[in-house]
Image 1: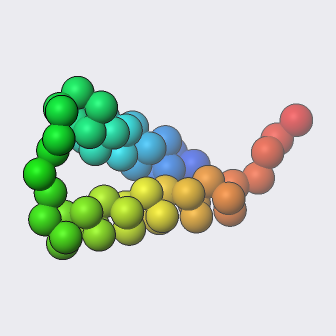
Image 2: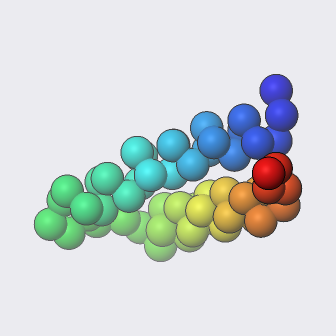
Length: 56
C-alpha cells in the first residue's frame, strides 16, 4: 500500500466520520480531547496530501 492510498483512505475517514457528524448534527458535543484529536487527524491528512507528487 502506498502513502497515496493511505491518504485517500484517511481522507474518506476524516470526512465521513467527522465532517458529516458536524454537518448533520445541530451542535455535536465534543470534549476538548475529541476536538483536538479530530484536528490532529485532519492535520496528518493534509500533511500527507502536501507531500504527494502530482503526476501529469
